[in-house]
Length: 87
Image 1: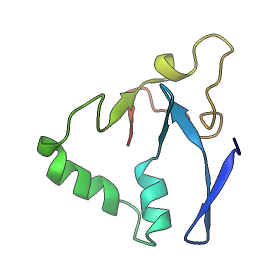
Image 2: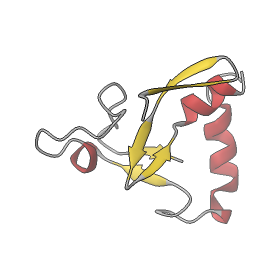
Image 3: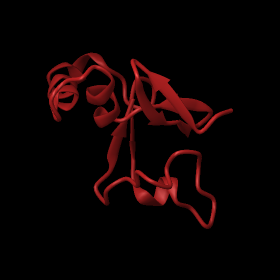
Image 4: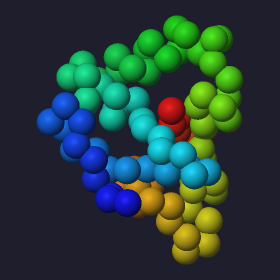
């Protein structure tokens, strides 16, 4: 599997969690050429329709950076201490 994918002429680092490809709000904004924060705003508005750990994941550094194991793609975009949402 490649570490980078090209979508709409934008290169994104591939990120995997529990065997699934995931993306950040920043990735979504970049691919759709929207201002920063657009995907996050729309997520918050529609979160009530989504199921955590099925439709989205909130990952903390302890979830992603265990020991020396670095899941694909998380070397560059480390989750914040309070957690980072991945779709």
